[in-house]
Image (cartoon, rainbow, N blue to C red; front, top):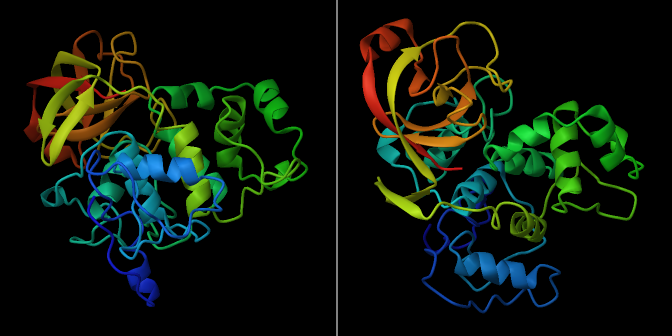
Length: 323
């Protein structure tokens, strides 16, 4: 969100570069990066910089062939969706390795609430891990909101056809097959060569920029705005609803996620599954479940304990549909 800190030699500090402090959208129309003249993504790099989605290292370098971390990418994704930086005061302690006060903490937690990521391993986000190409695609397709449900429901014939020409298709992780196939179908992704997708390779900064330029950046954003903690959030629709709360049941949600804070049970005839939501007083969430009693203008909000669910009771809320 701001200008990038100077590149440091320590690995612990390196994670704070690259996306933490990108210039606000509209603050500049160009930036003389010294090292992008030969990048295949030069025009996209400048475009995303001018949109406030990415930044350099503070010394005029973008480092296009450098690897990118999971924390940096989660930050890019929310910015590409037009979501202002979540408030640091909303810290929930979602991940054991995402402490309070880090620049990426609000983005990691909001990404979890929106269903963009579930982390890596129980209670871990692993923010400094280098992002793989299949992780890049999986998280970005999740960030598309309701379109992610289209990817999740791809038939065997459809996803097999999409990846069939890649000799290394057998190296794609099972959880990434459908998102990769969907991204290929939609023209968002191409292989690293004519017949190899290289899903386990780490993604470079220029690859990520090119991918976001083909996938999330062109994704429509609402023209209505609601003030949130650090800016205005674009949304498509506002729905008044009666909200109740529920907690752990042991079952997966309707869209295949483990239940978690941010998961909202809806009537799909009113709010399509996969839609990203903002509910004042509750925060960001995803329309990710259904219920026999959840009909018409009724939603059910996940709470992390039975006590919290009971205390929530029954409330009138506004549901803002982000996408």
